[in-house]
Length: 428
Ligand code: 0X9
Ligand code: ZN
Image 1 (cartoon, rainbow, N blue to C red):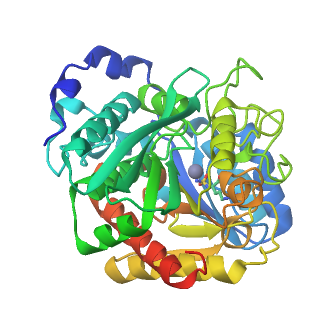
Image 2: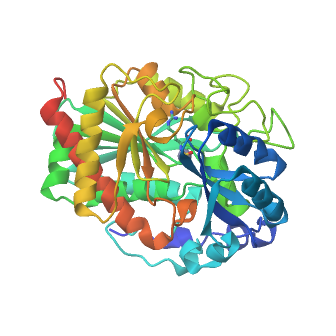
């Protein structure tokens, strides 16, 4: 049955698209900067506030690339500094606003094309309300299914009091199964994350190819598409490039905490985070200061999950802990081979190339991530961060036309990963 169009068309459109209040990005460029020395890396970091830079991808200390959005008013001065530092620069996105104006980014639900199995529109990015209605619809609709059940669960509320709701998908055949937990949109602007998770939900409930039947015979899957609903909504209605939550308590003029710097295991703003609320990687006043963090912490600790996948973008990385140190966990080999099973399947079936590694060694050091917490404190052995496509061509502004491909890719990866664990993990 189709997810009814009515809940979409009745949306008060004026409220859904207050375009007059939206932040514009005319003339903003995204640059790729290759820095070679630790000194240059430090200089680049120091320029963040001075030039109002938005770091799309940070870098390891030496010989790595950074992706940075630069506002037009600071472009010349910033480029001047880069020239003095002798670093290499190229342009990834000429004009961010031009890209945003493209129809591929529109979330105008009036243009929704209903297709697919639940009727969920996988050709556009959707707001929190739409996603919640989708989850409710799936829960009710699954009651008709002989094979699969779906049950909503709520782990808490956001700062602005939105429900942190997910859906548990499991086989109707009774049995004790391992539990896999998947969350999305910890970072508001990473729209492909909830979009791909909703694609998973759709396929898990409405299609029954052999590999999904086998997956659900072995595992229950818990999925929360939007863990940071306040930030996610704000990125739709006001500031497309918003990353954090919306908590204004620490600073009314610079609201928001980076939830992926706020988790308790080895929390440390000095490692890839910040003590300044005006930066995008503000770690919060203390570990688990945020309601969204607290909700996940309590839920993951109270339940017995076998694997934890937190879905972000971008970069095509399947990362395992740790993010707070370059040391590897003692069971590195098991974590790495399971991740390789996922990425090998994805690389085989798609045109993209995924990279496996520990967060610190493959990407950069950043403490306070949910993956480190899941492994370090909640005792979930197989804990990962997935950085969905692309590799930087569009970055956070991946066209909605890619949702189906990326969703499929995630499904392929999840199935191969789960299969691998079933065959290889002693208790899997
Ligand atoms: O920096 C992050 O939080 C993640 N990258 S993103 O571009 N989505 O912001 C990577 C997190 C990896 N895990 C840890 N550092 N713990
Ligand atoms: Zn992220």
